[in-house]
Length: 219
Length: 150
Image 1 (tube, chains in turn blue, orange):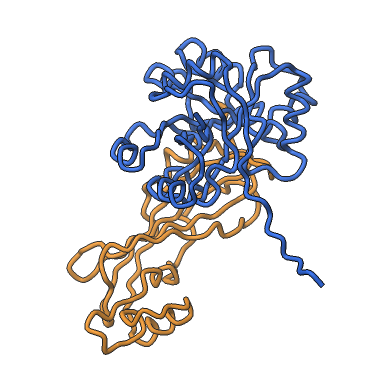
Image 2: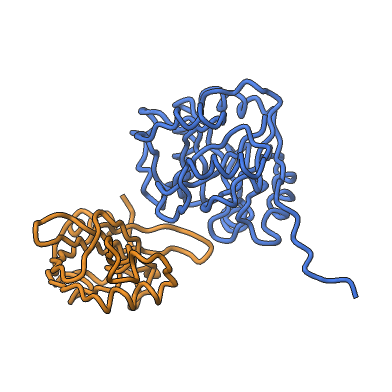
């Protein structure tokens, strides 16, 4: 199954997409996603319940978080009450080791996103401060990357032996599914199931970006 | 927790200032201004541009141009550098605003937070104006973000 592991809704301060509109867009544009994960910035949205939308659109909608650390941004899947009390999700200067350790101890899965990005990507910090031993998986395809960033992510992930996944990092409806992750399993139905599949390593990144429109005309 | 912008601790600033009211203003809603605003927005729905329409009302974004007298409360700390840039406004329309209405607006600091991105660390200060009509009913809420370099 194919999941977009990195999306933002209006619950994020810079998100402009309503979750239902993501669902409508996926179905209208026939984007081959089986679901998506809402990774709101610096928070975990424990209130929203998307089960009705899941049923209506036959999509899996899971919730996670994107937190900010001294080594860049990190996606955390499998957020639970214990993890929420482990560190302040709103703090933009979290030590990455704190996040990795807390995720591991609480049955969650933490992975740096857009690692090839300047300032907020893992590998830009590796140049300055050296690698982190507990990182094992990174987002190598990110729908918000500018040219060169994903290429750097793929190259550095290979150098460090990291597993890669993909996510659109969509903040507007039309960007969902630009990048995603394909899983060998077709039976993920819960965030716990997602964490299990991420831990198993049975997945890979895919790019579903639309082909750029050719604006040139034949002479 | 180390969370600072220059000499200002963002968490402390948030705790001290979020929710503080600092400006109070009244606005009389003028029919011609309503129409001009709607037309400037490219609006074609007659509810917003035809004063003879039975449901004539201000365009939902009309209140975004109603400026309060102050940008920040008195003694508000200098957070981040310089004057910052306009981070845009979010408007929530609760009830129709009619021509001739007198709205009272109260402005508060709604949020202070920071975030990191390609450009480095930025601080966001959110100013909220809540507009109520003569009956005290909330008709519009405008959140205005100001962005500063940390």
